[in-house]
Image (cartoon, rainbow, N blue to C red):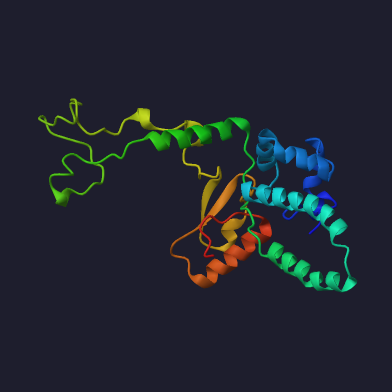
Amino acid sequence: MSVKSLTDLSGLKEDHLAQLAEMGIESVADMKKALADEDKVKQLVKSLSGVGPKTVDKWKTELEGTSEKKEAPKEKEAPKEEKKETKPVEVIEDKADEGSYIVNIKPELDDETADALAKRALVSGRRPAFKRQEWFRYSKLGEKWRKPKGIHSKMKRKLKRRPPMVLIGYRGPALVRNLHPSGFEEKLVFNINDLDGVDPKKQAVRIGGTVGTKKRITIEDRAEELGIRVLNRMV
């Protein structure tokens, strides 16, 4: 597929053109320069809704393909019959674009919240696995955390070479506490009426575990109409 305008790129909508113009991207050549810059790529992913890293990689391949296809016709200007044979190939590419990966809806976050989410991911990566006292000695205890008790407990007294205990210093930033990793505020839903009042820019929906398949399908369809993200979709 030859990319003549920005709307020819897969996943790019007309609503994105105004945002691209504010970033100084008004033509295909401007988009090529922007994709070569990592800072610009991060800005594209953050500002454009429905656009993720996979979509940006797809744009790069499509724009690289346009430069290759410009040189090819000069060498292969052979009979017209060969050009007729290549037409079905273009239809196959269109079908692939229709079934391509669609990025999930993203929340509208301010810079402070986005930084706090990144910090929380770093903190949770360094956080140790908290296991109860003497979990390795008695299998009946299990590994689930329990606060150590007893006047002779060395773990409670925080002596050396003892397992780490749950302390407040291991917590993440308070600003993004209880938020989904994507940045959405979760809301539990059991029927279609619960979707009323949900802000799709900041809130996402999680369907209750007691909801049946038939009702789940109706809730997911209604949420898609309203532009609300469902965190536990069936498919």
